[in-house]
Length: 105
Image 1: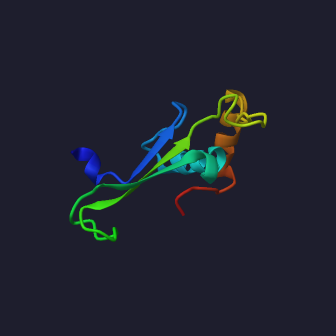
Image 2: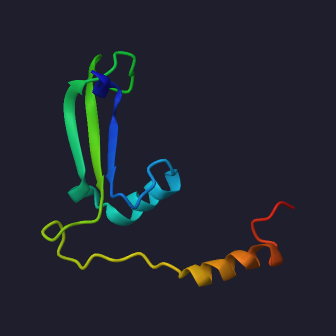
C-alpha cells in the first residue's frame, strides 16, 4: 500500500550517498541513458489526492537505473571516477582559506 505514494524510484550503487542530492544528481548525470535505464509503469494505483494523473486513483511510476552498467548492458568501456590522493586533497583543502574561496566573508 505504501508504494501507492511513490512515483519515482532511483537505484544507485553503494558508492552514492542517497541522502546527498548532489551525489544522486551526479549518478543520474553520469550513469543513466534514458532509453536503456528508465522503466515506466502505467495504470498503477496512486494516491487519490495526486492530481497530476489524468484518472483519479490511477497513474504511472518510473524506475531509474543509475548504477554502473554490467557487460551486456552497454558495449562501451565503463569509465572510472578520477580521485585525488589524500595528500593532494589535504593540500587543496589547506589552500581554500588562503585563496579566500568558500569562506565566510
